[in-house]
Image (cartoon, rainbow, N blue to C red):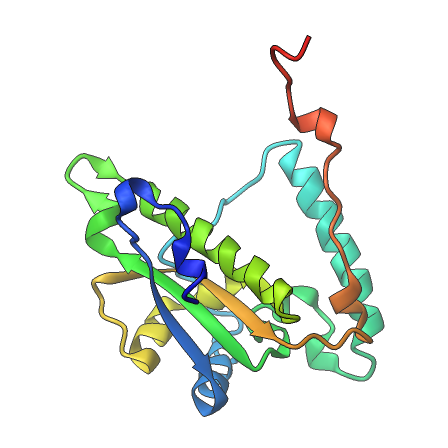
Length: 198
């Protein structure tokens, strides 16, 4: 975490705070999340309602691939048969890192300030890369913060904080196909334009 905190931020504001959770506390959070099945999510930062193209095709492709991989990895586990249910369960990880920021940084008199959330993304990326460097597996999960009021209550996080993201972290079971899955990426030339390289 000390190295991850070297992430850049707008004017060095370092708008991030963290709750690192394991053991009984994490089990209670995931159990409370499972009880919300069927309840409409109310994240502090809602996801998009729809994806225009080409983003929708990318999402649908991922969903189809993940469904296939999860079916292969959860033989006999009826509860785990739907890939989108694994996120709220943190993919069974033994620890989680929740990232949050101050509400006053985001909601200002001039409108929405997105930079604290962007900065939290930068520190999250540092955490993910450092986890991999140290032989850990980690995944950033919006699903982990779909019910922020549960997290506030169980972790004693103030209402003045907005919960941005959860990161599941642990040692991966490389025999499980889910941990070997790699999502597709667009070709460099389809998303990068080069200028002045003559």
